[in-house]
Length: 359
Image 1 (tube, rainbow, N blue to C red):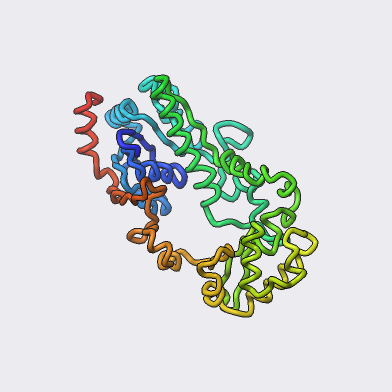
Image 2: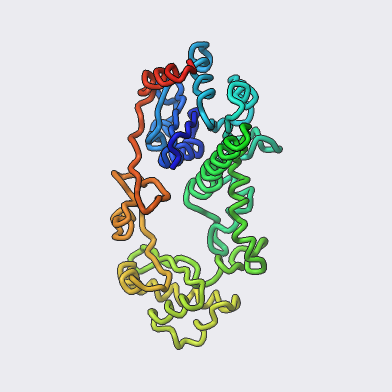
């Protein structure tokens, strides 16, 4: 879908290369400027999956010859991504002003935690910090429990990488219509806060001040339960017709107390009853009991178990031990290219730039 769109990516950690992987999965030509030599951080060494489908060239941005190559890549690209702290790219001489002098149509994507300005802009931070300050982490957990969320998925990826990718694509569309580039300030704290719009849209059903008081974080029908085997089951039957099916399968359709689905005063006792019920049998038992129904119940699987799940397997969501590209177009699943060796595409990249008259 993105065939013909060229993106130059300056090596970074986490959200920025994930956004580049997503765009490469969708068919964009993404060229990563890696630092010369072996990675100086174990996380970088383990991040080759995020480089799948991309091209790699190692450049020393302090060397004049390599700076010329970087400038040629910028001149021939539709977009650029970087994930440095504010001011770092400017100190390297590749900030937005210089990049736009080279290529006025360029969409310059900046991935940070706190954003390009504000009191915390220059501070270090990680996923949980951005979620905590934005108010998102407040909703992560049951009443009385310490908040928690799956690592990286909600902040780095949801509030960061996906917003960077959408921002880049919006900028490219605008540049093609107007001939003018732009700077995309994709801050995780911004994106995470923006994702709360769905909860906020629930109005009185969403609590800004107390956990366990909202429609989705307090009820007995919207939480996970521990089973007899020590594994967990996820229940979220919000709509009355799905809740009715849930009660029917559990044999509780005629239970007067459980019939009060939306009475917050009943939720603690209803939760306690379901905790005892689910704790009486194994996860396998409950999974089989609810399988194929509209009761909105599913097992909580480990990633390894998820790969083997019949639905996940039937859709080919995992390929060769890695998640496959998403979304699909016309139902087809695209198989991405392998991660490149660092600097493995130097000759091809230089030849391409030469043939296009950029170098």
